[in-house]
Length: 165
Picture (cartoon, rainbow, N blue to C red):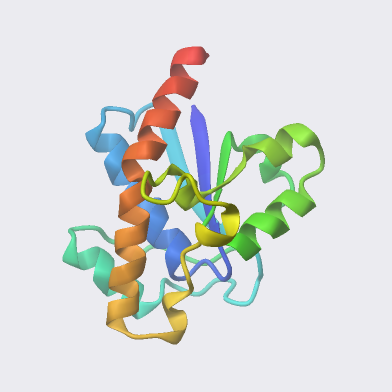
């Protein structure tokens, strides 16, 4: 099983949205049985809490649910247990890369939007998805669109990874 984890700050907005969106996209691409997706936060600030209501509503608008989601913090052991670690913003990317126990683990950390063809040519500072928590519904829509724009690129990357195994 190829394992992917999406990581944001508190694991109640961006990363659970990304987790559910990617899981569905992988299923639709015929990879659901070969790839698993989960999510976590870089902090324990929201530990055990459900998905933010606004993020949950945005998922529901597209036929997805995260009612069972509970926030959790990224654990160091996951560097070795995951094949791809997708940071949602540049601060998560920096924290995860700096916390990696070795080069192979550091190489697994990528920014989510580095797979978005509209921004993949830019540096990490320009590939983040800002935190919608401080905003309103339109900010969650913007996050959705940025997450969605990278899905095809992530799936193509995963296909190549699976073919190389």
